[in-house]
Length: 336
Ligand code: 5GP
Ligand code: MN
View: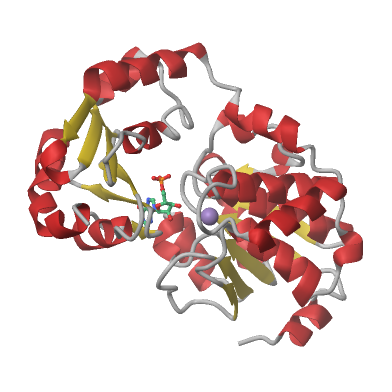
């Protein structure tokens, strides 16, 4: 494992750096990646952000978004950058399976691998780990890495602050989850002092929907929501055809699961969606209920206690049946 002073001395001379983050990057994945990018380019490094897939349009406003390389679009270039990198930062994920084919390229690279993450059960592939499951966002840990570990607070600027604010805002449910403690609010205040326009960022991320998304949301809530009172659970499941009908693109389904969780009494909500290759599940829970345990045990996934995901290779109907069938096992916890 690299010590922080070894990292400081590495970063004292120009490095070839790749920053990567998880499949279907969210606000925290892109916020932490582009925040770290904006910091590292100031220090004169050659830096590339490579994502394993595309990401929502409401994140495309972020500083340096135009520099992001989407792996499926530029595979050869990405492979070369990963192979030639001297340092690879892995942000907001901790198992190489989460970045698809890019994972094996990262594993094979001679670069130092630096993990900055807040998910459970990190896999052992890294040479440095700034990891804390108590952190509300990877962006919070990137802030801590730059300001406290590297003691480079003087290099913080508006671009870095805007990106990190986005990561913290999105992963903390706009500062409402338990993980958004007083320390997080102090970091947010510092980011606003540094120039993050919190009101504008909220608007760019949350008030940027297409008409399709809103109509699709209405359809999900009126036609597709199933409340299972017996288990304090709610499910919304949608087919490929429904996604096509509403012209749904990456990002349009974000947050729909939270509406199911907002029903009085509901402790576990699932959004189950038929993608081209597999069926994807997004679970949300309240209190102590471990949504990540269900994803890990039954759906090849994981995540946080109250926000987790996974997938099934079965069809949509069978996946929904499987999900309903596991509820009795958790009945006591769902009724606590
Ligand atoms: P979402 O429901 O927004 O796709 O994901 C919520 C959280 O669940 C993510 O932040 C991530 O921690 C976790 N997650 C989602 N999908 C997967 C998956 O396929 N595998 C694992 N390990 N975690 C996932
Ligand atoms: Mn995160």
